[in-house]
Length: 109
Image 1 (cartoon, rainbow, N blue to C red):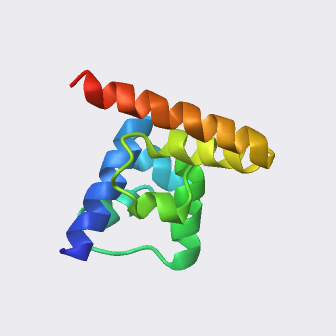
Image 2: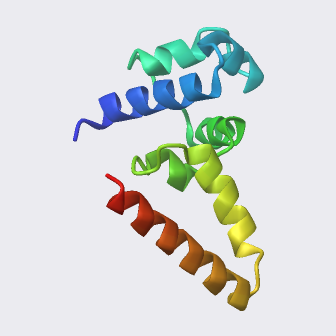
């Protein structure tokens, strides 16, 4: 895996999914207007602190940033937050429901 390319492409994809310009995102995280463009152009990388601000801005966790299996990481991250607040029985019920739904989705393909 080419990490610099992955990081730039992932950031671009997540930013576009959110529907914001690179300039607006740069300014929103307290950086210069062309900061995100530099990252997406593989000219620079964010510090860890700025990376955390990027994730917060996108509404995802750092773990979710690197999880490319999720088609909508912001929803996945929010879902996990709410899931973690459920009691054990509710988590079991919800997990069974999701498993059943995913099986139905596979059957219809």
